[in-house]
Length: 408
Image 1 (cartoon, rainbow, N blue to C red):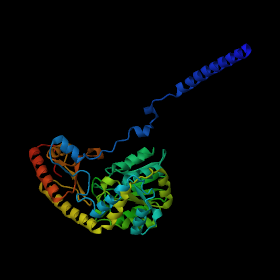
Image 2 (cartoon, rainbow, N blue to C red; image 1 turned 90 degrees about the vertical axis):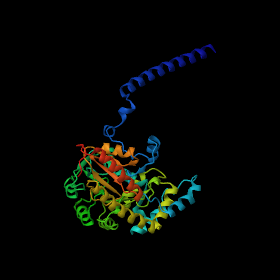
Image 3 (cartoon, rainbow, N blue to C red; image 1 turned 90 degrees about the horizontal axis):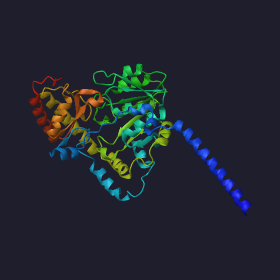
């Protein structure tokens, strides 16, 4: 017994010694590897800007104790279709169940609408998820992504977040310069992002201009065409891009239910693209990325063509009145093909936005999008636009004679 006990003690001592040596060795090795969490974040991600949303109307009203109108986020002032709201309420009781992760019914309906197969439709969390997935699939360090200066911020963010080099092409008269973008393509180019009409300038290129551009792009470069505002545009028809897609394999078309369909709060949109590309994007998307409520509302909204027509016609009439009213105040808005107006006002743009805010009108200063001397005003209802005219008139009268206000 004594001999056995001595052996066990020797074994225990040897194990403890080995454990100590093992621990010391591990600590020594790990000491050379130790980094903070911040140091582990790739360099190309550290400088990425954060997308800046418009201020919620509830926050402004609570803070300033006033009734406000929001003309900052390009929302549909007429709201969703009554059919969409009814469909959403009908499925709300099923919210304890996961939604259809394959969005089959919605893909089938959208595919039939565009004359493509369901395998060519990808339903996503608004256009934003689609923009991100395109870069994640096709870009990486050593490659390049191209977009225009003064366009939708998530384009640039998606390119930089992939580790690729961001190539920004200057605008031409507040619009995409398609010829200059074509000249910027190199063997390292993987993705080109376009918005038609463009946000935040409201300009659009024509179907002929787009077809000529697409024909100049090599097959190995993906053109991502964001058409969030296409229903409001006259320069390019709803079918123009889809016809181009039938001829070219390197085109991904993005559409959203956030604008003319009035479902911005439900976050749902779709892409038209080649099945091989969509299959790769599907591997990276968030599971169950769109809710059952959003899918039901989107399906129903496609059936309410009368509501869509009313939204388009109301926007056209109020956009015309908005531009005329701004001109009467001595300002020169850029001609718009969207549900908002881009307005150069001079170096006092941020101060003017703040003054309007305190009078209960929320607009969008655009310094963060590369236009420090401009604001963006969403087209509201007649009553909302009237409130804007009254408030902006007061602000301009107060600032009259100040050099920072420069009517254009």
